Length: 297
Ligand code: NAD
Image (cartoon, rainbow, N blue to C red; front, side, top):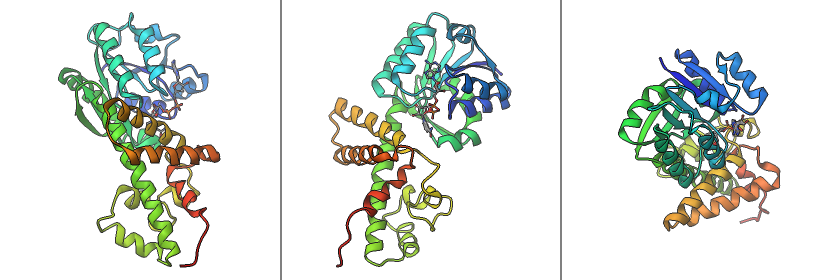
């Protein structure tokens, strides 16, 4: 088992680092927050006093940070300290342009690099069932795969450098759009007098089917584990969906891709967040549809 430096021990990073410890890796963590550091220490991580100390001599360095700027700043600080042949894996969700820059910085430092954003949220991080969307050279993906496995339900090799971030932006744009469509349909169904369970039974087995209905149904009842049954908490926060849709729109602008529904989804989620719902699960956007004045047909 190898030596791993883990930078960013927040809601996602701490349980991911803990699963690497459980798999037998020697994990050294670093975070700016003393509270985050304490959680990782209790999970069996050693703690580095600085980024330079963390990077020194490690086989692998994993980052799980809020955004592209954080990743580039950390990569800048550790570039002069990483061991030759070290594999740098960035699991943060960041913009494709910053991901490409991070790969270039790693190459200049003599390291292999992989972008590997995740899907599955905090529960997935705790239960080691995350889906990793990995991008990098074949050599880097080969080295990274066994390191990611103890944290993963699945590791999907998406292609070359930054392909993982590209896949994540595409996936979450689909998720946001299907969730909004599902919320629109369930609220319209209510207003037409349809029983929610009956509508679920149809949609979940017919052509309107999607994860937003079958796993994450936005009305209470049909899927007992969906956040709708718990006042839309906890789950995948609207603020995080706004962030991911913003990254998707940046990618659309850079490539000229036509994404009118992605653009509208970002506007709807941003409005929902700004009205005090940033920490509400993203399926709570059904409240926007529920708030529309009712008319008698
Ligand atoms: P978080 O805010 O809980 O954790 C981020 C951690 O990074 C914090 O502890 C912070 O102190 C630390 N940090 C920031 N700058 C640093 C620096 N320069 N050096 C060291 N540490 C630094 O965020 P999170 O929920 O763990 O999310 C992390 C990433 O995972 C984000 O990119 C997010 O979009 C992505 N993600 C989150 C979820 C989720 O459900 N929370 C799901 C999928 C993907």
